[in-house]
Amino acid sequence: MSVHRDVRFLDAAVDSLLGQTLGDFELLLVDDGSPHAERLRALAERDRRVRLVVNDRNLGLTVSLNRAAGLARAPVIARMDADDISHPDRLAAQYERLSAQPGLTVVGSNYVAVDTGGAPLRTIRLPEEDAAIRWTALFANPFCHPATLFRAADFHAAGGYDERLACAQDYDLWMRLLRRGQGANLPVPLLRYRINDQGISATRKVEQEAVAGAIRRVEWLSCGVGDLDPERVAAPVWRLQTGAPACDPSDTLALTLATLRLLDGLAARDSRNVAGLRETLAAVARRVLWTAVAALGWRLAGGWDGRRLLALAARFDAPEVAACLALGRSRAARRWAARPPDFDFACTGHAVPGAGVVPWTELSGFAGVWIYGAGEGGRAVLRVLRRLRGCRVAGFVDSVRRGGFEGLPLLSRADFLARPATGRAVVIASGAWREILEGLGGLAGQGLFVADVEGDLRLYRVPPPPGGSGSADQDGIAAGRTGNQRVEADGCPG
Image (cartoon, rainbow, N blue to C red; front, side, top):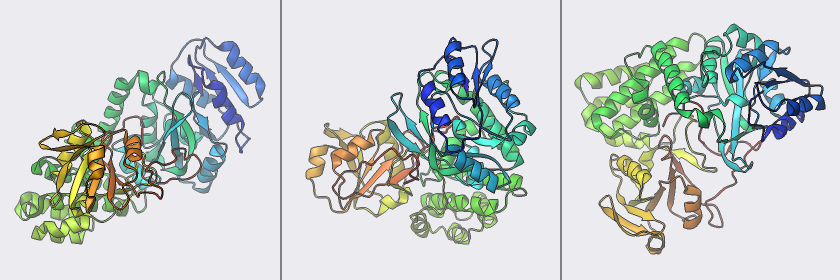
């Protein structure tokens, strides 16, 4: 743990470590040129396990972490920031997993994002298994840095943190550790991650995104798709998995081909070291292919691009997709695409506790779809719905406003709730979905969905709970996961 200026939450962070159920550890507390030397010394004197390391000047986070890792005497290293809180079982659970799986090089966990006062904001779900982590890593950071634990030998063999990087140094490290072995995230949230306006993620956001983009570009190049620009296509390629086709048919086709090439390149690069990788990635390939066929239908039959898709479908063992491609059977493709996803693409989805991820094609089964949110989020959802065959957009809903929006009716919430509800669906297209759910009262018996308009346009179906409230407990720490949720990690797409 490195400390520079912000010590508002330091005591609570250290206390959460000293209270671990696994008590055999040392806490290397780095004073990185802070003005709080006396306070840090006092912390070190409280417990013999706290070992103070003092830099003669401010060296920055990356150098400080390398220095601490070089001084560490244990065979395993864990990371945490000075404003976060570890669950009491964190070290024990992660160490048990690392010990039970010799091929693991790094293990993280899901986490709960909290505000500066410690109030939970949302539970964040990360990809759990190695194959999902490798695929996610091509788009975003697959680990929460202060929630990780890794072997010291692997860390040093990989070269440690790159001291040329002032931020996103963890994203770079994971790429090198995953070359040496496997990764995993525990499904239980074991960290409270504080959203801190004085942290690096807030103060150096532009630089962090630029560094993450450079790392991503290197990874795509290593998968043999150096002609693709990840900064231009990474976000729409990721969204294709959610069943949201691109605005233009030719773009959908190009993105589908790009996705399949990327999947094929990752499988070729890592399959030798990762058992079952191609089989796992095949599930992603099938979902993307169904999205393309459902959106384009007969236009894919024949032609050079159609033959390329057929060849790639065969490589990923997707005979049903290949048949639809060959015959241009968009109706059959839509039926297949409406099935629940047969792969786990956790990452970059807003946490909607109790809600399951569903493909956008599920909305084609309703007599009318209303979009709650007459703003940019609503426009994004409208663009997706207009590309779905058989989807009937009825209009927009707003808490108060009424009239029209984007050429469609705009109803106030009161007017909307007073209308007959048979066969209609509501898609909430706003970051304030919790408050909207409460205002709608659950909409029992109707289709109720939340679109991740601030992330990757993932669609969640919300089951209306008994009693009518659509909200749920956000504090999921150590209680397991309840649904696919969002990653807010360095380099996150969207």
